Length: 194
Length: 194
Image 1: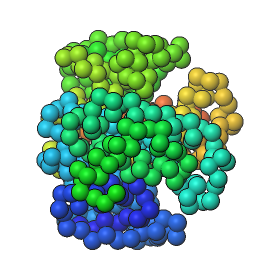
Image 2: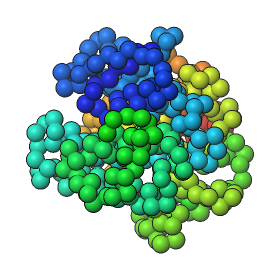
Image 3: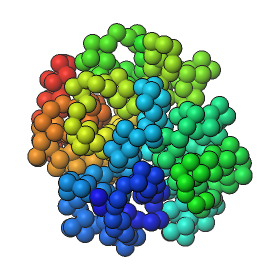
């Protein structure tokens, strides 16, 4: 498998974490978004939307969208609950991540860290909705060590990368102690360095 | 099963279409977003995010996020491809829908149809990205009658509702003939009225 990814992207990190946890062999093809390496004719032939991560499976077929990729890779593993309802809750978190978390928490971080914007100059909507997303995680983690239940699932893999990078966008995780503890728990469960 | 839904919402329509196609019994609880019926304490107890659709399954447990709901309901049916790669492509479309289609096509429609904005006054970003989403569908449908292959899947169920409503937001579907033909094909395959 080839993973086309940009090391600065939390969406790409999800795929790396999943593949590493599952012990899958892959070549990582570093693909620099800021240098428009996702806009070359070669890349657009793999993914017409021009986004990373994009993987090329062992049979040569491409697949895009971080959460679709990790669902495909992890199917049948312990990252996907076997209980139908827990599985559905995992999916609920994963769709929520793309609609209500990434567009605020990740976009704020991108604008501050890579476009040089001061956190105070961010669009208020980004700050407000990013904070609401972090608060929702904080609330959900009151009752459960992981997002979709008692153990690690793809819901955690999907949400931890941009959440741990939230301070880059001016969000202070000190206000979210359960989120901070959960990030450490996810990292430990995945066996990765903090 | 109870489906809390607002009849004006394409996200809610996905759930109705899926349940009807599968012949599932349900009570539809009309929940008016414009009247803040998703913000009552009773509703927030079911879904802390205060969004429709939210379903309460037969065992009393709630589930939110339209695409997570339809994946849960349709698991094991012919709306989910049995081939692992086609299934992954279906998921790719469903995550793309929430990230790159709904936030533009559906939001433009909401602002024009329900907030009374003129299409010419929409944020240019909404118009541009909504048009790009429709064009991507048009391109993808050149090679395939349905989005994830030769037959109807949840990718079509997820994308058809807001696409067919796109003219409400000022998008002219006459410029997307394959999309127009696909909408009719999806409606026919689902057995619904145009």
